[in-house]
Length: 126
Image (cartoon, rainbow, N blue to C red; front, side, top):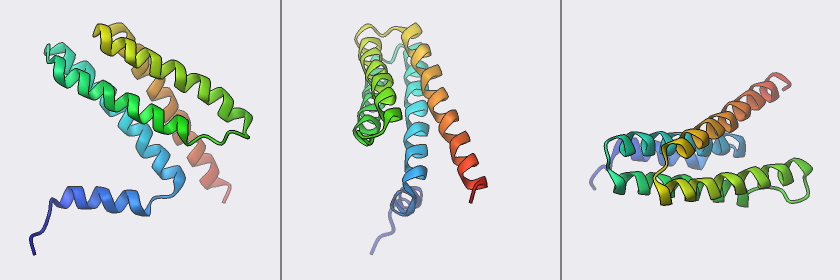
């Protein structure tokens, strides 16, 4: 039996054993990573890679939006923000617009950093 890519195996195990909070953090990290990679590939004029990274970022935003609890007031606010982010990522992809990509990177980093702080505060309360 052949051993697969150890890094891929590690990632798969991490996802399968993560708490919902940790999964959300992984998604936010992936969102930031894909937006950053789209910026770098756009700088190199690699349109295909830029497109692919922005599509992955859009998919992550859709997943985050779909995982919201509809009975929670905070979720309703996040839904509006995710919708805005999704539409702007689509626009950035269509126009290959660096400014929109930068704006979405700042927004994604804000989501990630806020979630990270919330996780820290929640763990201190345990």
